[in-house]
Image 1 (cartoon, rainbow, N blue to C red):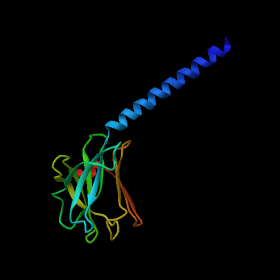
Image 2 (tube, rainbow, N blue to C red; image 1 turned 45 degrees about the horizontal axis):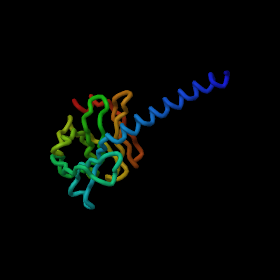
Image 3 (cartoon, rainbow, N blue to C red; image 1 turned 120 degrees about the vertical axis):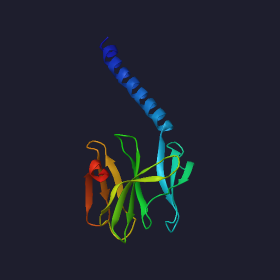
Image 4 (spheres, one colour; image 1 turned 90 degrees about the vertical axis):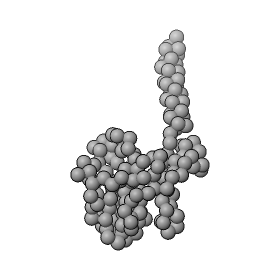
Length: 157
């Protein structure tokens, strides 16, 4: 009888784990991932989408337009608090960084606030951009010896 009472919690844990994994699989199947695709000379940058279960197949490819001449879009991320898709533009010559929102359908960007002077290095490679969802701050990292964390509100003024 004692083996029955000890087996029941183990079976329940196994069933709950199975349901959790099943729920995770369903969430993964429905998840849309956003990415960037650029030509070799960064003349054209496109917003691409694909399903998490088929990452090798783009569902959509839309050219990103409207960003400042001389800049390259170096990172994108979804702001968890609002669901908006943000992009970071960077001009390594002028060390100017600009925050944008991206229209997911048209690829048109809208500048948020004024450009900032950030020395992220002399190349657009190795620049990281993401949101910290806990404190709703943007993190920017690069190969240059600096990292920036700033409230989103500061960049929108």
